[in-house]
Image 1 (cartoon, rainbow, N blue to C red):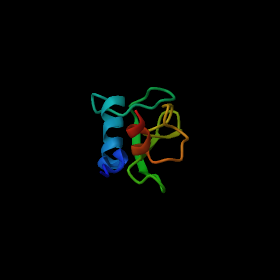
Image 2 (image 1 turned 135 degrees about the vertical axis):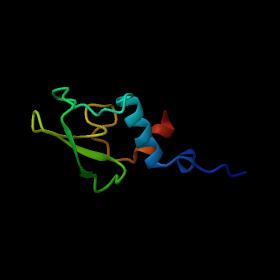
Image 3 (image 1 turned 180 degrees about the horizontal axis):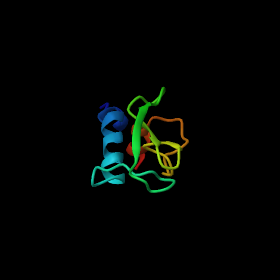
Image 4 (image 1 turned 90 degrees about the horizontal axis):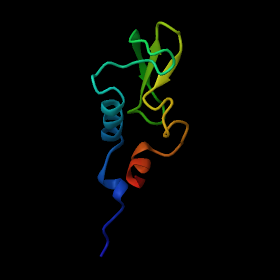
Amino acid sequence: MNIGRISDLISNETCFEMIRENRWPDGIVRCPHCDSENIKKNGHDNVQVDCQHYYCKSCKRYFDDLTNTVFSGHHRPLKVWVACL
């Protein structure tokens, strides 16, 4: 019996939505560097296209959905890490 891989049952898009909902439950994105709400969306990652990039107009720093999380800096798709959890 082949049950397949659990990572095939979930999508990166769903995982990034879950990260955003948990990181910013009120829907307001805050800068992880200065806690400002003065944020501008700044495209998406080239490899993980569901990862939103942002620019903080207050501290003038860039960040993404995974900045300062345990998932930051890893090169595996987010759905692989979520499947491991």
